[in-house]
Length: 192
Image 1 (cartoon, one colour):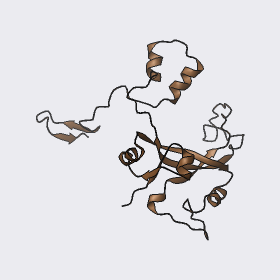
Image 2 (cartoon, rainbow, N blue to C red):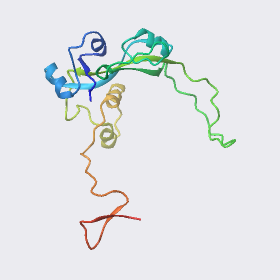
Image 3 (spheres, one colour):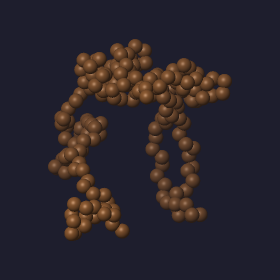
Image 4 (spheres, helix red, strand yellow):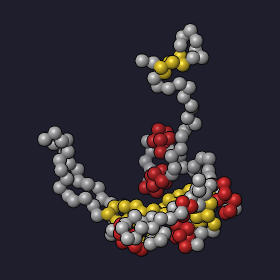
């Protein structure tokens, strides 16, 4: 089986135009880059109103199943994909539940927000920061430690940091619907 060869680059634009190399695994990418890497998927390029316009713009680089324009890529070149995103994110207006006609929520009065199509590039980003502990405390710890007020920059830093476990999760020794026999604790049987 052939693996996808993801570009090794500093950003999505470089991954599209001229990547340093291509690798399928993190170990290979780090060896080619000479420094730590992290796997990311980012949007790149312009926004398109329709999927067909995006497929036409990236002809030959994306799989195209449209009749008359069918294009199939080798497995190692499938690191690009199209994603539909909201053009201008906005919060919907607050509504109260209605509980009418067997439905809890009323039909929306506003039309759905307009969407655009973007090219998503999956690649190995060079210069990844590999840290065992973040500089800022986790949001859970900051909330429990004290009810001090946080400025907007501190809240933004808490929101953008990756989620990390407080301690490693312990493996389960038995399943949810299994039990150990009292006379033979080394035997696990289904619990009914």
